[in-house]
Structures are given as C-alpha cells and as structure tokens.
Image 1 (cartoon, rainbow, N blue to C red):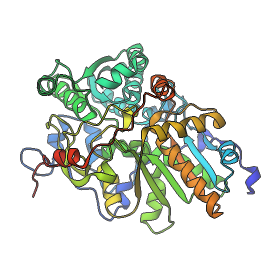
Image 2 (cartoon, rainbow, N blue to C red):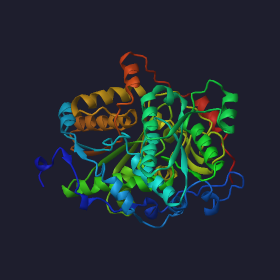
Image 3 (cartoon, rainbow, N blue to C red):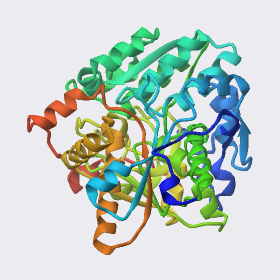
Image 4 (spheres, rainbow, N blue to C red):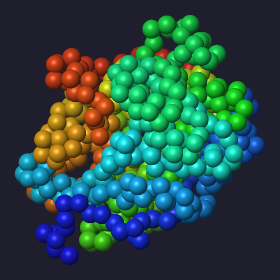
Length: 457
C-alpha cells in the first residue's frame, strides 16, 4: 500500500486484537539467569516464590519455553475498555524536523492510569482475585503503576496497598489522589510502617527514597499480612509477558500496511515498556527472520545499562528480595530526585539485560533537561503532552530522525509513547523556571554502590 494511504492513527479491530501474550524467553538462545535465594544462592523454587507472588504468576515467571500464554477472556474484556491502543504516524513531527525518516509511535496513554502499566496490572489483579486473595501490595515510582494497580483492584474488589517513592509522593500529589479515588492506600516510602523502612530512615532520615526502598516495604507488608501477595509493575519476566501486547498490536498494525521499522526505541527504567514494545520484533531477530536496530534510552542520572555491571544483585534496597542477574548500579544506589520517577530503578529486567549483554540491542543515556526540551518539541506539533519517562524515547527518536536528515536515509522509526504527562506539570514548571538540574552520578558514587554487590559464585 502506498505511503499516502497510511492514516495518522492505525487502529485494530476487536477481531484483530491479540488473544495470547508472547513469551520472548522461548526464543532466546541464552535464557535469563534464574532468580536466586538470597540466603542459599540457589535458584528460587516455585514453593519459595509462592509465598510472595500469586500461584499463576509464579508459573509465568519461571516458564522459559512456552512461546504463548492465552489471555483469559475476562482480561481481554477489560482490555477492550482502552485497547487496542493507536499506532500513530507522526506526520507533523516529521514535517517539523524536515526529515526523510518515517516516524511511528505506539500511544499507551489513552486510559485513566495514563500509561501502559494497566496491561499488567489487570492481569496480576485478576490472578490474585482468582486465587481468593484479599489484597495485594506494591511499590510505585512516578505513580503510573500504582494508579494502574489501584484501578484494576478497584474493578475486581481487591484491597490495594501502595508504597510510593517519597520524592514522587511529594512531587505528584494528584497521581496519589487518583490512586485513593480507586480505593488504594498510599504510603510515602521509606516509611515507619515497616521494619525495613525504619532501618532505611535510621541510616538516612532525609532520603528521597527509591524504587528499591519501596519494593522492600511492599514485600515485607505482603509476606507479613495473611491473604496478601506482592505484585510488581516492571523488571520481572511475568510483566514482560503481559506487556508484549504493546509490541504484538504494533506489529499487526504495521504489517497491515506493509511497514517494517528499521529502528525501535523505548525508554528503559525496569524494562516493562521497552520489553513489551520490542517483544515480537526481537523474536523475529532471534529466529533469524528479520533484523532491527533496538535502542534502550535511560536517564543519565540512573544509567544501569550504560554504566552499570551485569551481575547478580538484590532487587530491592532492603535486601529481602531474591537476587536477579541484571545490569545494576547496586541495590543501595539512590538516584537523584529527577522527574522521571518511573526510570529511577537501580537495575534492569533480566530478560533485557541478557539481550543487551548478548549484543542484540543498544543503550544510551540522556540528560533531564534535554528530555524535557524534546518533550515540548513533540507536544507542540503532535498535540500530546508526554510523560517524562516516554520523553526519553522521544529525545532519541528525534536525534535519529535528524541523523536521517543529515545522511538522506529514509529510515522508519518506531518508538513507545508510554503515557501522558498531565500529572507531571510540576516537572514542566521546574523546566520552564530554570530550576531543573542535570545531576549525573560520579564514577566514585557508582563504584561505591557496586562494591556492595553480593558475592555469588
């Protein structure tokens, strides 16, 4: 089909929506390393994980061979409230950049949570409800995951306890209030409500918190409260699985018009959005059916891919969670209080870490002020106010499109627009008022944190 026939927004019909999630690990030659028991350094068993996660989610977490998992009808029915999400041809951005590149973005912000996080939140809440649990606990950084889980739990009648990174809790009060609208309790982390929170505060009473801190608190609350389990919005294999619906829909839409992306770009914090977007494309790459250039974009203030180490580390600051082999800055690393709260995690998905280690994808880091400059550039021509997290991908997509302008290459670029920035106006205000900093950790800071990695044979 000719280029001028491609609409601005490509929607799939209900019949075209994926009916199964794709498990990228099934096609990986080098599987991600197993989670380890922090006490014994032996692979975590299903029985050990059952005490933390829902039974069905443990099965999904440990399965490296099943390529597709059927999406239960009840979840597909919920998805219909906001899916399929649109794949947008960024004609206006292309014109503004005067680039020969063709730019597409998958927009995941057309639901009340404002992000892609709802794709996994409803799945995890559904399995908890089916197991007969009373409620779930979780952490949230920027608040998208907490909002999404609150929505899912409110829909299914589950209790929801959210530990929100303190700096985000203070920066984003309206995100916190949306969670409360849906019935969730929201606690700034670290807090005095858990033993691990009190320990962290005793060490540093003025800490701004981190996702690692909030994870520790949420896990403690789940494991010490009968009828509760812990759920996580990123990093884990099960989350990558649920988020594959982003990439599956994107590929179906592109295939419909005979479009093949050359470059695929996603922001990277824990990895849920990037992993979901690239899943079917990376699957083709692993099977030798096609090739793509895939770029992970992370903040320069929390550069786990670009400056971290590929090693076993704790998933949380309190060192109570299993050990995961991933690119990490060390579980004790507390990033500066930047405005992309969803990207302030010390580590990276074991799936994405293995792919990066094997040279199957690239990574780059960008400064905060450059990210917000790109966000405004995008908003002024495409009409969407993007989340700070998503704007990392926008920044690099613009860079790649301008590179095409210099070289004359007609590359096709796909990036993930994970959500909207309407709860991030304090961040935009800081940018406008010249109060936004570009703090980048020193080599000494990172080395000090990495020196505390657990010694695993």
